[in-house]
Length: 328
Ligand code: C5P
Image 1 (cartoon, rainbow, N blue to C red):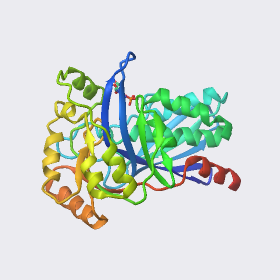
Image 2 (cartoon, rainbow, N blue to C red):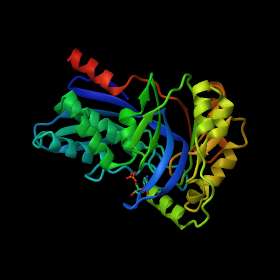
Image 3 (tube, rainbow, N blue to C red):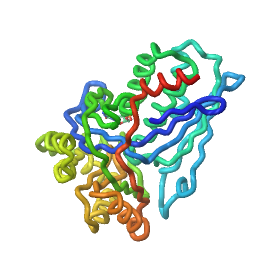
């Protein structure tokens, strides 16, 4: 995330994530699945701005910049983002102010939305993490960070990554448990990706259910060669090490998983994979130029929306919050 002070409040840019690796280790008693996943934040961003209100309401407004928010032919719910109590932003802020004893404090939140929903890119989780941070800046102190982290882990499995998945400027982490236990990892060089987002989305729950229905338990994969590749900056090892156990299950939810895989394979790239529970895919490229060329060709001939994204770089949120508080 990148945090700034705005005229009457605070603003953040929050990236989405791709899962470079995702293995399912088993089903837990609470119905969730134990994961071993490597997440990297990349530069397709949402923006949130928070300002105070005189009443106790949490009012969310959503805007789509040019090129976003318009359905492709036959598109379903990618841009269907609720602005009511069901939105994770509203729920996160409501829970945070309750925990901090600020029940009467209302806010306006403006969300500029680029990260599509039902794509496996963690857009809702990214927004919730950003909202918790903005709420902390308005209502809390640094001592309140643990409360925000607890709210994050209860609200969703990916939110903690966006708060804590940082090391040495890069946002890259191995995440276990439901996905909420974060071990930040080293990465030494920027990576260039194409994100391809087909017109059909995948519901996370439906994909995990399809996985449970699949009786064929194959051998478990591990991310060792990927992790070595990331440390050494070896694109072949990174591209060769991308893996997602949920891909076969997601194929049962929409044929777009396979269609977009085939479309991406028309081009020269270093490795491709589905992100999260789908339906978006990413491919790793050698250079930004190569990625941008694939983006433009996919947009013209692929039937999918395509974006260039680079591995996200920014300092950790503790450091940024300290700076903002010193400036105020
Ligand atoms: O954590 P989140 O709310 O994003 O998860 C949505 C749904 O995906 C859960 O209700 C659960 O059915 C499934 N899920 C799972 N195991 C995980 C994460 C999510 O089964 N580790």
